[in-house]
Every structure is written in C-alpha cells, then in structure tokens.
Image (cartoon, rainbow, N blue to C red; front, side, top):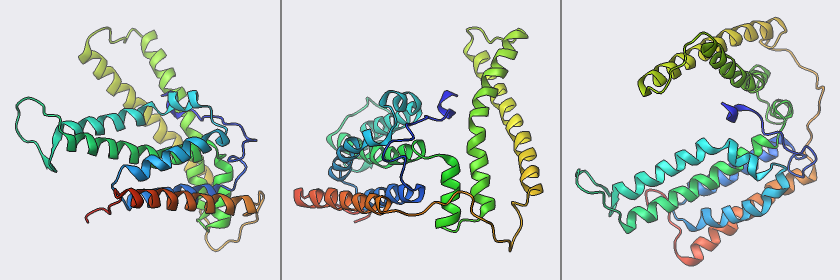
Length: 266
C-alpha cells in the first residue's frame, strides 16, 4: 500500500511551478496523439522526449520506479498476452504449445511503448502538482464545480490514510494471533478480510467527510466563491502546452516519414 503515499517532488522544479491545468492539457495532448496511431515509432519518439524532460519534473527516478511497479507489472502482463496470443492478427485458440510469432512481438512492443508514453506524463503531472493547487486551478480556469473539485481533493488527501489503515490493521491482526502462516489459502482469506476492513473504514471516513463538507457549504448552488489562491496562466504555462504539441507533431512526422504511422481501425 506504499504506492498510495505521495511522491513528494521538489517544489522548486520547473514543471512543479507550472499551472496544473497547463500540465493536464499537456498530458492530454500526448494521450490524443498516441490514440490516433497504432505504430511503435510515435510512442518511442515521445518516450525519448519524455525521458529528456523528466529531470525538470523534480521527481526522483528511483522513487518513481518503486511507486509505479503495479503499472509496470500490468504493462508486462499485456505484453505477454500479445506475444503468446497473436498470430497474423488472430487469437490462438488451440491449447497446444505456446507459439511466439513476429506479429505478436511487434504488437507487444507497440502496446508497451504506447502505454508507457501515455501513463508516464500522467504520473509525473500528478506527482509534480500539489492537490490543493490542482483543485484551485480546475475551479478557476476550467470552471469545474467546487463540490466536485474539492471533493476529489479531499479523496486524494485521504489516500495516505488508506496506507496507514492497511498497516495498522495488519499489525492488529498479528497481535490477535490471526497470522495466516504459510498456507496460500489462509493468506488469500486474510488478504480478502483485510481489504474488506480497509474498505469499511474508508466508507465511514468518507461519509463523515461528506457531512463536514456539506456543513461548510460546498454543496451550495448559485453562490459566487471568492479566490484565496489565484492560479493564473503565465507565459511558461502556454510554452509548456505549445512545446508538448510540437513534440507530438514531431513524433507523428517521424512516424509518417519512416512509413509506420497508421490510424486505428484503418
């Protein structure tokens, strides 16, 4: 559950100082650019550009790798599925020996590169952005309802508490002699019970938080709120969006030049 703990990046990093909605727009441009093609060249070029820009995020690579291992594990599973299950565009239905084909390897590489190139900007944006600044920027710049924006902010603030609850419940179960031992069935049963306990605690905390927010007027309609923390769009924010758009166009142009670019369902 340590993946739920914030990454705590450097607040003075260039990317951390940018407006949150500008960073969201930049990540959205990368996603749109990669959803319009199925080739491996476009995501590969974008991954190179993202690797060059990563030091400006203020997130340490080692911390990012330790916290994003579930994502990497999921991508690896998708790659294995493509390698062993694709043969000339058709799924292998026979239960004989596993066949590894060139089409399967190519599809696996393409999917892995696309997933990495899409998810890495999103992870970095969330890691390099203060949740309070994100909520303020969404309300001020994109006119997102305050009830939704600050509700999401409260949910993000509660994520570390889920990790703390998980470890506390595990220690309490061991103190009561409920250790599963080495039995896989007992471990699975204990894990399921612990997940259910954490879920119940999270629901109770969420209900109390919702009642507190309603009491403070977050559900009021037709009320104009004052701005305590302005989130203006500066020149650097527009430069970030323009630079991201240029990077997506460059990657697409390289893919078209080498003849690998192709649209989905084409």
